[in-house]
Length: 202
Image 1 (cartoon, rainbow, N blue to C red):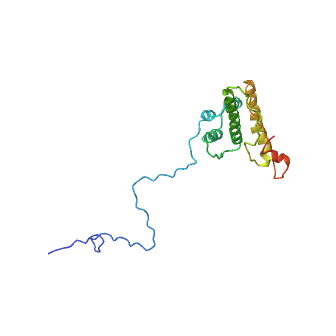
Image 2: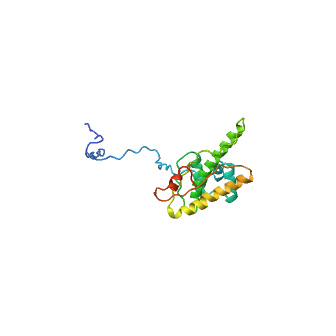
Image 3: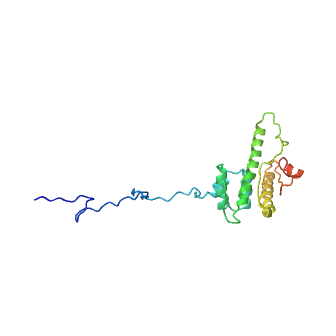
């Protein structure tokens, strides 16, 4: 007497379970791989910048003015200066009063002051000791866009005040800074004063 055992997929009481038929057009879930599921990495989340390290990139005149005027950079300022120092396009998102505007202005001021320092070093190295040129063609080097209502406060508090402060530090040390001027333009009216902003901002 012989007996047969049903194989998987065959009917019968002792047989294995049937595989469900795949419906045409149905999307099948992926087979589990056994690897742990990792959350996506957000490129906007970066380690916090070191406030002290963020100031080291500045010219000594600019750095000394800031440390005399403020206890330390805010987190927004430190992060902005760290990114700007690496040459990255930088968007600063932080609450009001966190120093975003000063972060932008001071970085631009430092760039202009550093250019003057480089010119002074080159002039001092010349064999004929020719004085540094101060009559070079003037031009607009930094463009700042602001809502009209906040423009006057931004310029006075975060641009003219730092310029005056850095200038005072330079004067105490007998250092001649490049002439940095400021001009404000509003609207699109074509007038001589607006055109001069491009060549001789005052």
